[in-house]
Image (cartoon, rainbow, N blue to C red; front, side, top):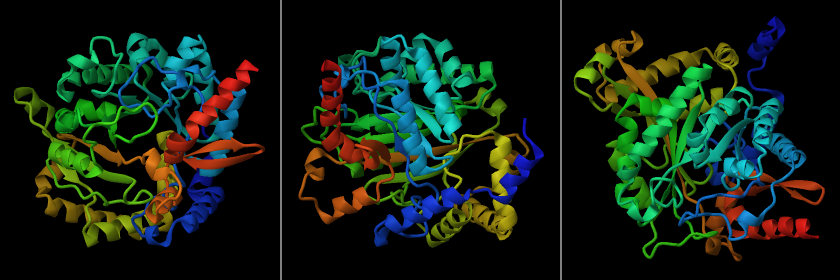
Amino acid sequence: MWHLGQLFSLLREPVSAEKRTLLQARWQELPADLRVGWQVVGQHHVHCGYTLGPSFCSFGCSHCYLPGNANRVPLPSLADMKAQIDANRRAIGAGGGLQITGGDVIDAYWRESRQDELVAILRYANQAGVVPMLMTHGQKLLDHPSYLVQLVTEGGLRKLAIHIDMTMAGRPGYPIKALRSEADLHPLRERFVELILDVRRQTGVRFSAAHTVTVTERNISSVDEILRWLVSDPRHLEAFRMISLQPEAEVGRTRYSERPVTPEQTWSKVCSGIGLNLPRDSFLVGHPECSHLSSLLVLYPSTSSREQSPVAGQVINLFDDSSESRSFLSSILATFGGIGARGERHTEANLRRLGLVLRHPASLWRIAKYAVFVARRDGVGLAQLARVLAGRADFRVLSVVQHNFMSAAEIAEPRSEQVEQRLAGCSFRGAVRRGDDWVDVPMCAMNAVEREDLYNVQIGATQN
């Protein structure tokens, strides 16, 4: 139950002084070329954090960033996981996103019959003030759906990332050698949609998932099928609010393709699947070679119309690389930046937004003006907008993200100036203990350089 004083404090200080200080420091750390108005890092969030520890996975995928010793790493103690969460919280501030990752985290805790401990980790992360996202291939959740209910209701899980693609070996009913196209996995994707929506109905909690995909020579030709499937039904986007694509990188246990897939090829297939020519740098999330991001609005006909004749949604790119879009995005980040990846209740989130609007009332006019610009650009008529506002048409938002991880060869010394800039601008860093200190390590450096040695130390500690 909210106290009146708490509600007013959110209006008075929508973004805390601590978060503003962290953002300002991160902004100053960025290379000068990256400090532009549409840069997310240093304005909207400090970076996304990650934990290390549960590294076991029951699958044997062809493209895995984990080293060969990963399944021998002992499960960390609850105290160690809490210390990692606290260190990440100090780095990213309240409301920052934190990936609970390693191998398949759920697999690791089930193998040790310590499932309740993962619930406790999620609960602690929420209490610490970060927003945990649990990374998994999801098979245990399909086999034991009641565990997802427990993670949501007792652990406070609100964000889940489920990896599904043709590189995965070990999925029951989907042998890797029998897969010919990503479309062969659509029935599996449908099962996850049903699972997520069913748990939402059971719990009354609006949690959602991201769909993560590794892109290789084997599946590049059908990546567009995943995007088409996503936008073909509003139920799909009710469950999966984000898709994250990762072109292969030569790290860990990856069996690198003879003709490795490039970021340009992958983004081209994204555009083909969406049916739009999406710029790769509408937003900057760190360095432009590291991440590409598009925020899409998908408009659907009324439910009765879909029942008579299913029609795919109209996809609208909310932010392109035009001067109008970048000017608007820059103003929005300057006004509303700092709210970050918050997963709080709607009341708190809306009060934070209201507090920012009260400080910047002109932002409402800018939003309305930009909405008209996008509607005219994409041929959305007033009648169609009226149907959406009146509830006679569905709409969903989809975030499309592409993360271009670097290989071990790129990270190795001596590094090029571009690699140094990419590491300095990295938006995906985890807090790693160095003696008595904690250091934020970019994920590319962790996967390509540090992970195997770190695991060897942990394995050796249990043998002594």
